[in-house]
Image 1 (cartoon, rainbow, N blue to C red):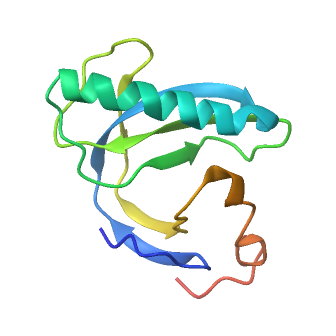
Image 2 (cartoon, helix red, strand yellow; image 1 turned 30 degrees about the horizontal axis):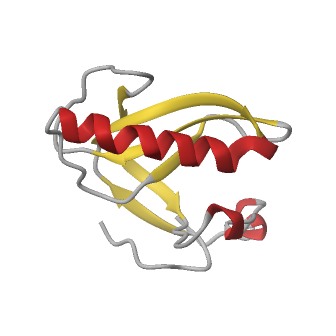
Length: 124
């Protein structure tokens, strides 16, 4: 999985992958705290269960966030995690996806790719 920073989304083909996540419905003003608490809980549970992290952290939004975000955050894993303290087994489907990679703090992750998502995207 290529995870170098990119300022614009790109279309890529990905394989299905297992994940360990924490899911939440969170006020958008509280997303930073949700990310911090979720990632602080995920790593110890994975280590305790001897489930290896095999890729970068991600957030999967189940709907476009407005005042509230329905999302899961987690890591791709080499095995399946047992549910524990809000940590759940999940997965990301394979197929063609739009990917935008952000490196750095959540505070600096503001909206990007809006023009691309609204119709100025490259051909599939």
